[in-house]
Each structure stands twice: as C-alpha cells, then as structure tokens.
Figure 1 (cartoon, rainbow, N blue to C red):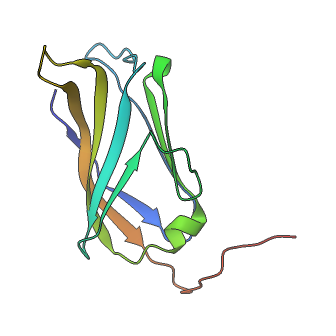
Figure 2 (cartoon, rainbow, N blue to C red; figure 1 turned 90 degrees about the vertical axis):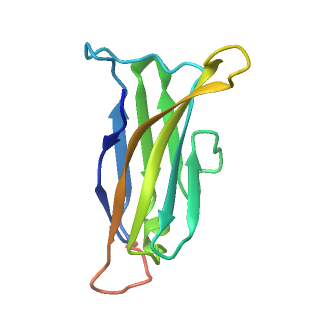
Figure 3 (cartoon, helix red, strand yellow; figure 1 turned 45 degrees about the horizontal axis):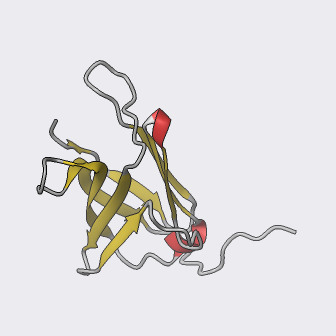
Length: 133
C-alpha cells in the first residue's frame, strides 16, 4: 500500500490534534499491538524534528497508539505551537512493526502519510498564551 499525501495546518498558539485509524483494504482497523510510530519533519529553516510514540515526556507533545483500534493520535499543546518559528515543514508519518519483514531483514516499516505542514501565524504576534482565572 502506498503512502497517502495529506497536507495540514497548525494554528500558531492553538492546541493541535491529528487522529487517524489505520485500516486494511476492507475497512477494518489494523491491530497495532507491538508497533510504534514516528512523525519526522524538516522545516523551511532546515530544522529536523522527530515525534515518536516512545516519548513519555508530554510537556511538548503527546503521540499515542490505541493498538486494538488501529488508532494514532498526535497532540501538540498551545505552548508548543506558539513557539513555532517556521512557516512550513515537509513530513513523513511512519509505523514500525514488532515483527521482522523476514529473517535478518529488520522490522517492517510502513510510511502511512507524507505532506506539508503549514503554520498559520498569529496576527497578534502575542507570546502570551490565553490564561483564565
């Protein structure tokens, strides 16, 4: 199965959520038990950043799998997006199986998505996040 192209926008200073379910050709969710995922992007300023489901420090992002549902969820808090200094990034979203492709061939890796991330800049140029009492 070929990767799908999916472009998306992130509003600077706003929380961001991307969620998808990995399905087979019949529309059934693929069990991702034992799998991990990674989003890698390269910004227009040539900075490379990796986001993985192995991350346990959720202060800058949270990327999780719900294996039995085939679901991936990528979350960025407003504080993280507020600090984005780039305008665009090219990204790949990959999955890695716990099973070898074949004996000695390493783990199976599947690229699910690729595309462009566009950061929609704040008009106010505020560096302060919304706070309520």
